[in-house]
Each structure stands twice: as C-alpha cells, then as structure tokens.
Amino acid sequence: MAGSKLGEMLVREKSITDEQLKMAVTFQKSVGGRLSAILVKLGFISDENLTAFIARKQGLQVAELDAMIIPINLVKKVPRKMVEEHIVIPIAYKDGVLTLATSDPTDFESVEAIQFATNCKIEVALATKASITRALNRVFAEAEAPEHKSKEDLLKDLTDAAPKVATPRHQAFDDLNQAQLVRKVLIPLLLEKGVITEADLNRKARELEQHKEG
Image (cartoon, rainbow, N blue to C red):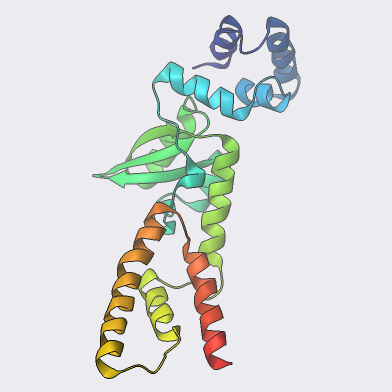
C-alpha cells in the first residue's frame, strides 16, 4: 500500500483530515521518510489505530507481541543488524516459512533482503513499531542477562533450592514426588502462557539459593 494511497484511504474513512494529509506530505517532501510514520509522528493518528487500519484493509493479522514469548533462537534466524535496521522481529517458523512482525507490510525491499539472508520464504504479520522495538529489547536483554540458563537448568535450580522439612519417610516421598511433578508441569505451562519469563525464574532461583545458604 503506497504512502499516497494509504493517505487517501485514511482521509476517505475519516481517520485523518485532508489538511492533515497535506501537512504530512509536505513534511515528507522536506525531510523524507515513510508517510505512515510521519502521520504517527505528527500525532494525526496513533500507531495502534494505523496498524489496525492497515491490517483490516490488507487482511493481515495483528501480532500482540507484548503477550508473546519469543525465543532468542527464533530471532537469531535473522541477523541482529537486520532486525534492528528494518524494525522487524521473527515470531514463527514452520516448514521453511519465517513469519515476521512488521509495522510496514509494503516495505518489500526489507522483506527481500531478509529472505535472501535467511534463505526462507517470508510471510508478514502486523505489529506497531513501538511493540516491535519493545519485543526486540526484551528478547536481547534476556539473552544477554548474566547467568542465563536453560529451562531445564532453571527447573533443577528450583528443585535443589526448595526448603527441606523433616517429615515421616513415606510422607516425605509423596511430598517430594508431588512437588517435582508440579514444577515439571506448572512451570513450563506458565512460561508458555507468558505468565512468567525465564528471567523471573533466574531471579527466583537465585533468591532461593541465597536463602538456603543463609
């Protein structure tokens, strides 16, 4: 969807005024940039409303990145320099098809560059530019955090650091089995649903370890 066509559609549906479109086009001619980004920057339409408008017109899904758990290994399918330069983030991969969340589905140059770099077929989903930036920052921060551990290591840490209370032998055995079962089932489920993050588990494991040593 070219910038001029997008602007005309926004005016036609009364999402912006004709005067606002003219001001944005004038601004674009003087400083460059994409018209959609300029409309948001000038405050004529919100990032969220613009994204929803484009999604509706092009029949694309809107990715709720703030509610998604995005593995660092998935993001690494695209060189970090490229995701940061083009402001995109991989959100799914299956059978050689890589799905990218982008705020501009008409940026075919970026899509082609990433397709060439990854040797994957690219599909796109929409997300606001701000949510993509937040997701990238979150994923890279968690990956670079000190003492970053796998889920299996985190589960072991939590099991080892749990307080141990003297109980009758048969009861202690039952309690241990139940506690281990809860950790093995509940914690991965909480991670999958996005209720907690691996960073949360890291922090709690350290707290329990410090408590045990104290």
